Amino acid sequence: MTPIKGSSFTFELTSDPVVITLNKLTNLSLEDCTRIVHDNNNDLEKSLKQAYLQIYKPPFNIINGSWFSTIIPTRSKIYLFKLYSNTPIYNNRNNWELRNILNKMINNLPLNTEKIFKLEVVTGIMLHSCIGLKYDATMFGFYLHERVNDSIYKGLALTITSSTPLQRSLIPLTRFLCRLSYFRTPILQTNILSNITNDTFEANFIKTTQKLIQIFNKTNNCTTTLHRVFIIK
Image 1 (cartoon, rainbow, N blue to C red):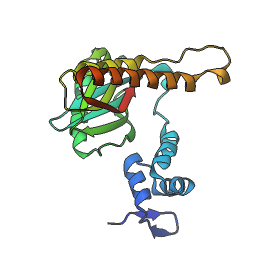
Image 2 (image 1 turned 90 degrees about the vertical axis):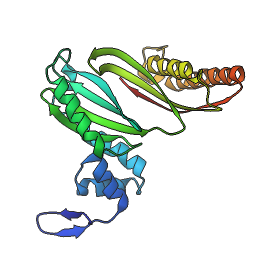
Image 3 (image 1 turned 135 degrees about the vertical axis):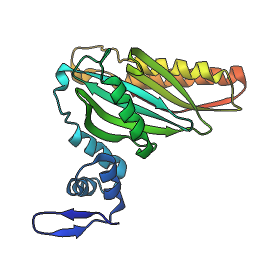
């Protein structure tokens, strides 16, 4: 069924697949989605980035709260959730309710794309976004930072790697790359914001990662590739 875009006086059919996809992923109105897609020349990736900036308005003051993350693995998929809380989350009696809600939600979530919710799912805890990933020939590595309560953490890092032939020794490498990714922080060489060398730092980080993988490949006589890194903090 084609979605209908409405106003006070007129209705018109919206059939642009990019607009429909953006609407499903962000829950923005079709009018907003149409405008954003038009502004970005029907580029879905750019449209998602603009939509993310538009809807990033939490239902409560983010200055007085903290960001958290949780992870739900299933037999064939894994889901990463970014949460925000403006109430104490340790031993919070709403945590079990939160977990049950997230478990029910994953059945209808898209894969390989971040879906923005900006939704207060239980009192004082907002579900900001989620991304679902499917297991295939790749290997996932995890680093879970500071467990707060049950399956909730202060942050996490996930790497997606592959190796030919597959090596058992790949597991410690993926975990190390996760820690390296999570804790990387630019070194400020000046107090002037415009002179912070983020580009130089990022280039050095990539070189270090590539060097580690080259050493691993040579030592284990294999070909290992780091595909993606996800960080929530």
